Length: 348
Image 1 (cartoon, rainbow, N blue to C red):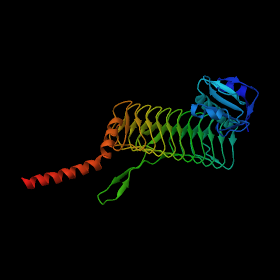
Image 2: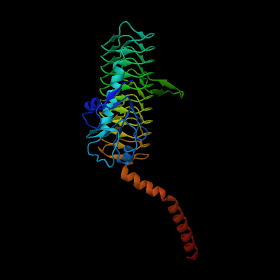
Image 3: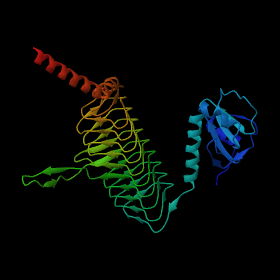
Image 4: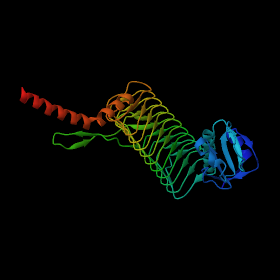
């Protein structure tokens, strides 16, 4: 278990210690539950009461925080407590994995595969022919890397990740457990007898730098060419990316979302959970897609917010929802008008 003092942590996150700089911690904890020997943070003012109740040894806080009572914990003041805590978690994770090195057995590494420096290959991993792997790559148990795959530096492949042949991964990538990269796209051609003939999927998947892919996410290989995940993209768990999709730089997609074949997502798109797109359409840069939205046509207005099914501009969708809510009353009024018209017709 790694242990750090308040002074060491302050150096990591560029903070200022207030209190006992020699106080040490070896665990992380939520501010409302943290115990002695644990570090926590306070970023949201609604949790400030816990600051005076917690047993945490060290707490990261915003430098603008004004204390209302005395506290026993050591504080580390930073401009942004949430961002600093995230930085600390990242550094802690890096330190934990740095000690992993070498090749455990049993594992299989083809004789034609090339591994860079400071690599780690866990037991029961499989690395195919002509695979090229960069420096500081961590490959955990039950990872399968197909033939001719290229992987850059500082990549983590968590347990059960499968990377099919010919795929290309850049640098500083994390892929979580059970994700599948490069499986066949869903391509079947209808025939005259009503059956379907499989269309061979001959392309690959390209994942650029600084991408993170969640557990059990699948990214299909292109039919021809490449399915491309641009730099900085973050995909949640259980996301489906179909063949020939291109996801623009720094786009984030929440869990259980799906992109149909040949969809082109712009830069900086934010997509909520359980949202989806039809195929062969594009989404402009900076678009925000509400959860459970269904996109049936291209979104051309950059930085717009869309919601609903079929997805529409947020303000338009809200007006539609209001009218939908009023339909029972409108139906009642129409029926009353029909009765009134019928009565007037009889009198006439």
